[in-house]
Length: 128
Image (cartoon, rainbow, N blue to C red):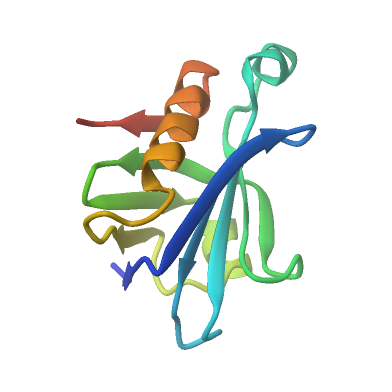
């Protein structure tokens, strides 16, 4: 499973739903990111497929419904990709692990957004 230390994280909500952006360094891109987008409660009622939209540093590296699940812990985030997402986002494996440094700016806000995604029915689980 590929493993990356997070360099930065940001999160929020808007017309496109709830989102968290994970910033990391990879062989593909020095300033790489993984955008994870899930629906809010209103969007969740309108769609049967709750999988997550994923995008890296460019829309050419994206996959609608590519995130099968996200497991969020205080020290890590594990993203399970569909096979299509693994190919489109050019990861080496369907599981990707991000290590969260202690006291990473913005991580508490990201935990809140991940929790909202989970409550809206997205395949996100937040563990204490």
